[in-house]
Image (cartoon, rainbow, N blue to C red; front, side, top):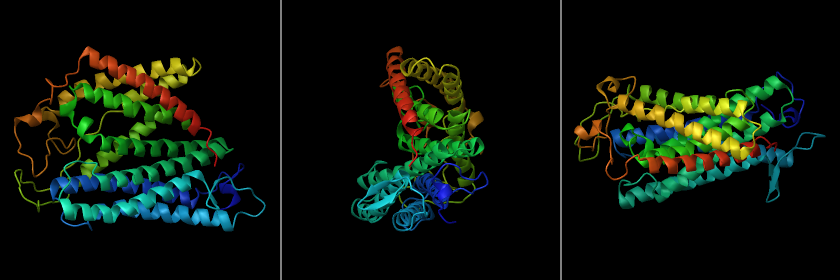
Length: 387
């Protein structure tokens, strides 16, 4: 699919297909997050047997696709722009291309750099004891670059579209890509808020208020659809649920000792947070109270998110730790082959060390309001991106 002037300027035909680089970058964003979830399950189920696992290939396929498609876009924009059209973009080292394309390219370079570094790290030091080892940190930055770059490309198309139906179509893509970014953030916070066992800790609600309020409010303001935050939260949950259901279908045998918990299939990730409920609250408040001023709106959306998040997760965590959730649908009660399983699986963790107290909720409320304000600022900036 050729890059035409219609892909860059107002007045694009309603029937014009999405630009190839946007399709490729959106595919790359999904591929890397699917690969990361798959890779975590692989480590929990089998161990790190080789670098050339299918999960790793899914991750780096996303990097290659995003880097190649956006690199070609930059070359075409620089050396063969559409005749008679001024192509929006930013210049770097004499080359020119959309801002989102540059972010994707930088993300792809970071991912490619992390691959040999990660392989050397495991050879030298063995298995990771933390999720964010130095190679994984570089990889995480690269993945975020690709996801955020794809989001920027979709935002530019949405904000340049003159036809309302075309703007709405790109708005749906913007919201879904925001959901991919939220999914990535939830993976990074897996140790703090990933498991229902942590839902009585103060840190659980502070991290939720800091991360998800910003992302959902920004998506709600930037995407040109009515239920933008809800769509983003639904996309996050859809990715999680599909991975939970699919991974459990595949057999797996641990290959690294010690094996304290024999398993027969891939270990599914924890059940996702029910972010759709607080996202609905954010969408309603943005639509009905959008003219009160950003600081007042930040107070409303921040406290609204936290109230819905606390009530939802507090009681849903009880359900997830009950026998009713120990089935294929919820994927609960699945633990690493190296785990010494016991009664701790069905209990809340660190209640004595970090309990969810009124003081902790007060701090979470302050964090939620400030995060909502950042989200409103980000959403306003995102709604202006056109190059």
